Image 1 (cartoon, rainbow, N blue to C red):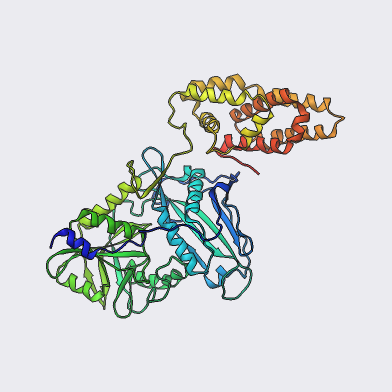
Image 2 (tube, rainbow, N blue to C red):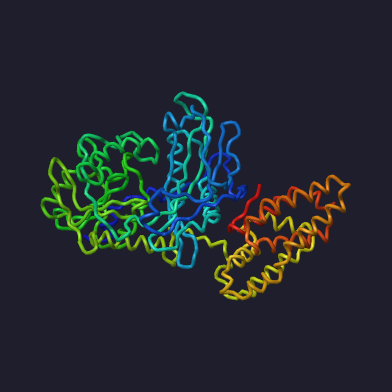
Length: 552
């Protein structure tokens, strides 16, 4: 039988072959998304695998969208990371009406942001939400919103090999009433988590225990969906097997039908009884999560055309027989967090069965090959159909001609009128080139860049000049309460709150901007824009001092 016929015979359509991310009713739109930048920045952990472990750190911001039965979806918001205030009757707390996803973003060699098959995560989350009667949404729009969040927190995406940024979209039911029913309120949110390599020193095989007393999911249940209720019941069995020397459970039904390993899909690379090599994985029957890495590995191995690739019902008795007869070549799991997880032994019926692997690479040959292929796709510099590649918003980071940066700075500080000041204050980082040049320039090391010193020396006296300027105008307009209040407010913001806190480079540049604006437009015009001005000043100061923006 030719290889083409073999592939045609054993092919199974991908769960993600025809992605429909649309929503039958109005959904939120990425173009309506607003961004509020934090003023309390978190110290980023070092890129150390022992420190940057899975789930240990969160980034500065998060995405949030609320839904009600009467009003539908609200506008999406990128906001500072925060804790939720949730009603004790909320349905997610009592009935586990919540679903979530797990994806990853990577930094490519050219500092671009690379997300791996995020559209598949959106599709799977839509299916999970429908299964729990949570509101549907436009998956393509949510994907755009997540891309926007990644750009805001792009500095949190590690650029070291093996490191990534974990993406956790979640929908929870928030109706404030007890009772098992479809929730009339829900919240969708997305948080990010920088993570180190799952295997800091290379792949590491695990020992798994065939659990014959506890099942993860049953036919007709929700094993094929990424819902919260699937995970809590697995915690106690995991603790039990760890106490007897195993790392994970191998889940199966009472009749021995193999399902998953821990939270990973399973693969068995063996020779069948006819001596043909086969890569076998349990078929999607509703009890197994349709893993995105699983789907990717199936497509990659089918394209290799080196052996049969089969999805079928697989029983533990077949696995034990293949090991006993020496036909098992290797076993491994797959998942977003681990990518490829080699298996060195399984425990079944009070007996341990050892699995072959290469001790030099701590994996089988195929496991290592697939791991390398996946890593290259996810973090390499080549385009791939599974990669959505976004450019870094810090477009000037690679500029070598710092004279260009100085020219941008001069454009900023030569403001002509109030409209320009307002536009500078309210723009966000992904839309304005000047912001990027300014922030990169301010944080250059003085000893390395003489242009920086020159620019600083030219403006270093603006602090005292500006404060004297405010005092003079305070006396001039002492009989005008509105203008006096405005001046006092500005002086208070600068003198008491911000100037003391921030470095001199930030002080002198902002003082120069405001000074030149005051002289040109007068206080009557400033009065009309007092709120915008005050928050604009705060906004720019925070941007300069902490590399981000605050808008209230």
